[in-house]
Length: 632
Ligand code: WAQ
Ligand code: MG
Image (cartoon, rainbow, N blue to C red; front, side, top):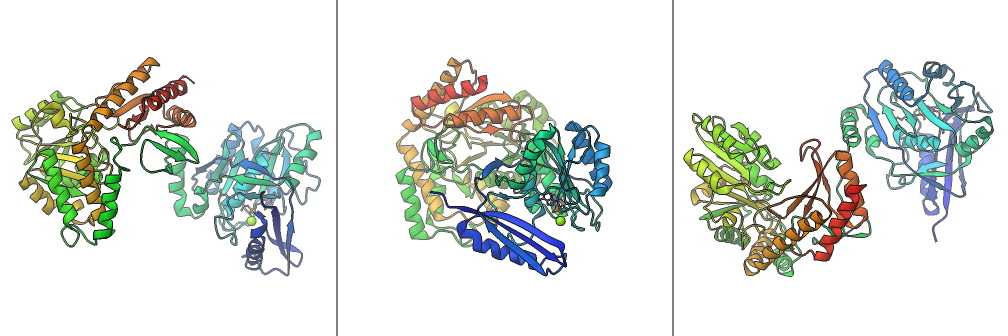
């Protein structure tokens, strides 16, 4: 049985003049706390000391739950600019006599409530024009969780009010200017536009403000509209928190940029997967098949791997206590590096805390000003960041176009060092680098060759040793990989000559100035490597599963190709990709949409990643749900 809710309302005045008011809808248990908060707010208001405070507690009856209006922020520098923006927004929303409506703000400053105006005839519809109509019995569903309800949060209260108002029968729009002399942000709201914050809509210091609610509909309905505004209890859910922190001006630019992302379908959030890493998970209480994990070989939850981590943590401690060059190297670190070198067949190896750091720390250490880097245009962001940080001249060649590489490399003869760097498996398309030819070109031009085997280690070659094994060719000078994907742990590494590793140990700032990953991490990666060596059939299963999934997609007319475990399903438009991913998720499969800037604009896609542990039933059901979502 759900707990009873109460409406708690506060009003404070001095000499009969209104000072402040506020209201909350809270569960019974929170009533005493809420009363205390509202009393504090009444007694400490900037407008003055009250001689009368009324706090009322009542059962509001059946509560209507509404989804918050979406929020957009328009940054304006002056009141005039803000006024023009408000006018433009309402005009766009079909309000015709907008100039005359805005002029009515001259009448609102003495009103306690809002002016209710017929949007077309401009007649006033409230029974008491001196007071106006007050929207009451409303609150934010999460207000209790948000802490301090004592001070006024203009934004949080306004969006609740605006959401309620826009759901009242016949209401087509609202415009609001605070009467708080220091609060220059106002808003325009309609059902379609949502809540449009306008960062400056009045001059600082002006006590004039007010609200106008715009009504369009039959006169007989006005009574129902007033009843809804004044009596219907409303709780607003999912109020965007963005604006709540953005009440001070320095946040305006950030808020506007984020809103731009939202409007373009480019906003990002973290989805919480409530399960051990693996082929299935639970999100928001719903079981899902995960078709997007890089834990390709299902090693992250393997008992041999997790036990190694737990044992090492017990034996060596949770954290390493220092950088690798000071006090952070313990036996598991040394053992892992030796194991990696054996596994890849190189003299030596070095480990960084993440694959990102390994790339940034290696590229920026190997070359500097006066050197040249040749980089595939679709290389991973960590390579790009390493290039930028190095100070070397960066020459980008067309994706997988080794003729273009050769041509551009020929133009870099005068540079002191040349480094050519490429992903082994391109992370957004799943295609491979032609390694034998790449190595031949680098050798001929006396350039360092470097490949990033993030998605190749454990996934390519008969025993998962990567791209060299896949092609049966020699090693590049710098063989970079991660522990975070097929090996199921985390970290990045470089395998290569002793000279290379000694150099990087001395020069890589991401290695030198970072605390060493804990021994548990190193021991887990070491154990995962041992499992991979003992069970190469995992790699074969991964490959068979990938081929099966691609064939299932093809049955539904979805043509995609891959040379790895990454299966890109191109959609194009960013918002459409999000909608498709959403439908696929509703059907029980987690395949996120990948959008700009991770891929080019207009190249949005679902990026599926297959695991050795998926069943054919899971894969064929996933293919079917993707096909259905793409159709409509
Ligand atoms: N119902 C109707 N009208 C009201 C109500 C109400 N419950 N509360 C206030 N008004 C009218 C009244 O005429 C006030 O003078 C006027 O609105 C302004 O009220 O995203 O603080 O409480 O940061 O001063 C906008 C937030 C803040 C923008 C608006 O309004 C943002 C604000 P205030
Ligand atoms: Mg005010």
